[in-house]
View 1 (cartoon, rainbow, N blue to C red):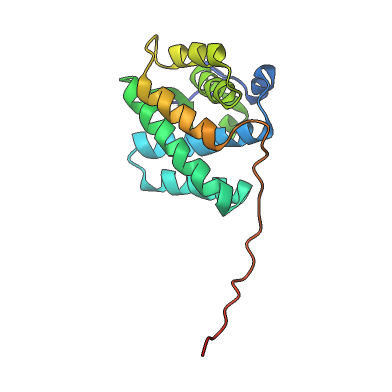
View 2 (cartoon, rainbow, N blue to C red):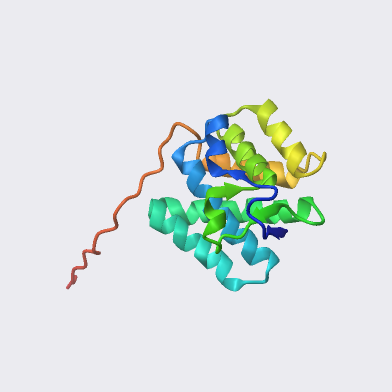
Length: 169
């Protein structure tokens, strides 16, 4: 993976995700994915936990933890699908938060189309991200994520109350 240093070069506004119809859940996935990818490529053990924390803050433990876990599988497959990995914006750079690379756009497009069971759009996005290879591990990881978080089913942030303990005699 290469982190894009110059946020003006090779970048487009993150709002471009609206052109393919991304929902708010998908917008939230990009920040989580960036942290996970940073953890993979920069040997930063905190990248994964920051990704988890963001997901839990956004959607609660019941949704956030499985979302981060399945995105980790997508990130691992992305890392294996291309020798140099995808170009990603630095998640720790405040200027980069409102921009994205072409690779990020296509990764989000892939997840967007998979969540809606639109094979043609998903295939195009996979081909772009992998530079022409239909990588079965990436497809499997994306479909696993999409099966758990299909479009039209709103992930909910459930507040976890205090546990109710009782003494049994």
